[in-house]
Length: 412
Image (tube, rainbow, N blue to C red; front, side, top):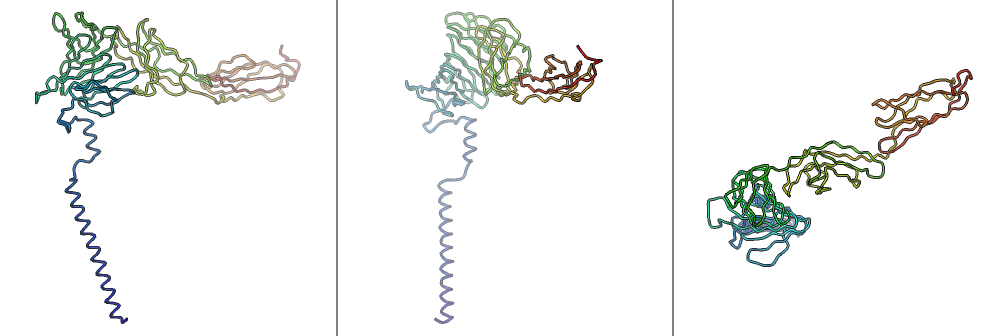
């Protein structure tokens, strides 16, 4: 084959290669145009989910208008649609519609989010039914009636996006427009309502009973709503900074506060926001003693309760449990092994806070750990033994045998 034929063949191969690449690029461009037409660009999925978590859609795929979303589910939570008699397991983020119901059980709970700052929290062993009162009215704040059997906490913003009324124990309580915080608690065959911010108006036999902030009222079926009474004052902690040191076994920790025998709500948590509760108890005495806490830092608070109406929590206290396994440092300035009999002063340094014993006698020391103790050496053999014990019970020892010389100054 001549050189001209070889060049001609190579040129043909190059043209075929370039043509194939152009054809692939053309197909790729057509494919991308097809994808863009089928799936147009829009809001990223992450932003869509974030917005959905804050704002409820106007209508769902079936044309229904959602009223709230379920958030922060704890343990077993059930729901029932308004057009059904069957209860089903609830899911985080699911939407609730008009006349839907939510039920909780022992140590379970859920939050109903109507708007980013308007929410209701359902406590344990409770049942709520949400009814929209102005479903067909446009341009006004949404109005709801929430029927409650059990415990319910509410927090409404000042944006006035919704109007709320609570039906419990045969009474109707309307939350005044604006920012509000309240709590409904079961109290035997009654319900107690506590208002922490805003105002709630209860329909009474002789008119409206106003329940302002820092007040509460007890509601009983068939009994006229009584006057609002102030909520219990926040207890004062006797010590808001507790420190316990221990070696092996956890110590007995005592939490105490001001007040007489009554009813208190005590909370102990690992975090200052009390999201990770370690203890959550109702108590009859103004103290709690426990010996089951692990080493670490804790935060605690307590509130007063009267007829199930809970007042504000006290200031937050802190409790630190330190496990010490290392013996305290001990340094003793012993005299030489042979010293003149008579009086001498033994000095040394120990870890601050530790107790010092010289030959079984406790010696007082300075805050920095320095100590001094007067001794009398007798003629002959003397054993000096020093012991340091820290607050957790760890001990360090130091000893030396000193030979006393000179009979004229022999101690007795």
